[in-house]
Amino acid sequence: MSHVDTEVRPSNFIRNIIDEDLATGKHSSVQTRFPPEPNGFLHIGHAKSICLNFGIAQDYKGQCNLRFDDTNPEKEDIDYVNSIQADVQWLGFQWDGDIRYSSNYFDQLHQYAVELINKGLAYVCFLNGDETREYRGTLKEPGKNSPYRDTTPEENLALFEKMRLGEFKEGECSLRAKIDMASPFMCMRDPIIYRIRFAHHHQTADKWCIYPMYDFTHCISDAIENITHSLCTLEFQDNRRLYDWVLDHLDDFQAPNRTRQYEFSRLNLEYTLMSKRKLNDLVVRNLVTGWDDARMPTIAGYRRRGYTAASIREFCKRIGVTKQDNMVEVAMLDACIREELNDFAPRAMAVINPVKVVIENYPEGQVEIINAANHPSKEEMGKRELSFARELFIDADDFREEANKKYKRLVQGKEVRLRNAYVIKAERCEKDAEGNITTIFCTYDDETLGKNPSDGRKVKGVIHWVEASTAKPAELRMYERLFNDPNPAAAESVDEVLNPHSLTIKHGLVEASLVNAEAEKAYQFEREGYFCADSKDSSKDNLVFNLTVPLRDTFE
Ligand code: ATP
Ligand code: MG
Image (cartoon, rainbow, N blue to C red; front, side, top):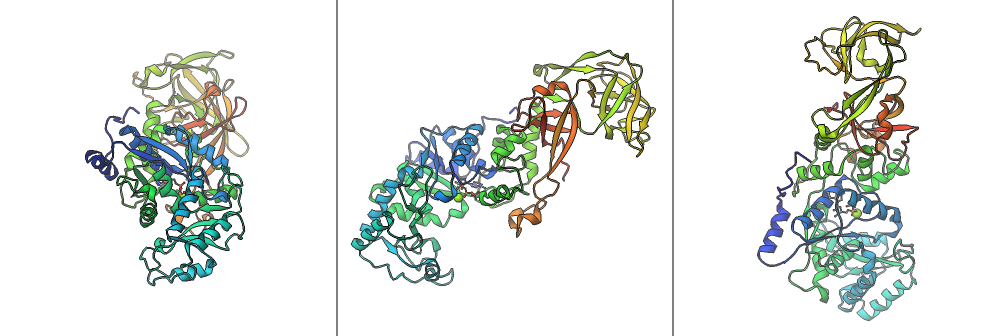
């Protein structure tokens, strides 16, 4: 992007830590990872984490792994695995080596669990869910030890093996780390590290009926991959104790420079839901057309809507990385995409509410080809051909029978300039039985082609148009925010905060050149906004355009 100085690296507390670790020789290179759970599409919050992890690897000439954190087989799906890879690459990043899966390490994780049992640091517990909760205590009250806590390692090994062999039911027992039931950190009160799930796994099929928990899996996976800086969001701050405890007690991970976890604040964006679980609800309830609905805050949704990867990366750069929780304004994201599209989007003309114009002094049957610049200041973007003839369409909002001086469009008896073409004057109009204007009769001045509004003529405004015989009908999907509430996550239910006007469909007319519009590539429809052809629903015979972003912020 022209306005972005790519030479200036971001500076933040994590990069400061890395600088220091490299300066002191604690690490000689940097290894990060992006660890999504494949239980949904990636959203704009993930983009923050992707830009951070991959960006650090790039700038420090280190490596960044893509690791699927796939320990919940019931909620995960191979479609999500695929969409996540596509989205990371579309954002402009490439992971090092093969894709990793936590499930690649299930054998090792099982071995490490056995090691903890052998050391008397893990036990099989038969308390049921309610009992476990009761024994855990509260933030004010310490917990109580489970009656199964002092079983011998030999017994626990045998029980854990029975768990693995499927001899217990789901929920009948679990493997717990033996830490401290009085710890002020709830996550340290003998957390469950393995549970029983008779579920088919997208990577390991039916090999396992016991699955390791996130806290046990994540730190070990990081350590196996020699991650140096394990970056996650603030809600894992307490869990760092458990992250370190697990590694502290396994013989393989005693190197002084082993992985460390650092937390940063997650992205919260106004008017936007940022939880895969809640986004999944919108999809399942058909409140949107899918994870890649253009109103969704998913990477796939923004892409389909015409946002560029560069604009999302720029947004992530501008929000920065801190430990401060905050709420980012949507205007910030909009500004990033507008700045980019203003520079790079080709211009085109489309009429959203068409009304016919007949130029009575223009020869019948004549069609003239006008070469129009694709960008007002970028000659290198070339020109395209526009047809001009006696019958045109303009937007109904651009004509008034009478208007005051502030209205700089077409008024009966007055002149206006047609963008890229002639000055016309409205002479009279025709209406239907309900009083709606159906045709505006005009005259044109054949001396005015291609001259700009400073050619000496006092023409107040410039309006856009399309030529009637060549213009193509198009469905225009006009989007507004999906939610009315700046903090939809706080609502009792999404139904309360859903914007009923998030999608309005208009049937307009677009200039003929747009038949060749590439999907997902935004154009500036002059005076209307940025639009891109829809990647799923648009075809040459049935054009469908998505509103990427209006020209100006109409909400504030
Ligand atoms: P969700 O609540 O949407 O399911 P998650 O944290 O459970 O999010 P993961 O797939 O586990 O989703 O996330 C992968 C990585 O992305 C994690 O390191 C996580 O911290 C990070 N991440 C998720 N949401 C955000 C966010 N809003 N801002 C920054 N990073 C995020
Ligand atoms: Mg998660």
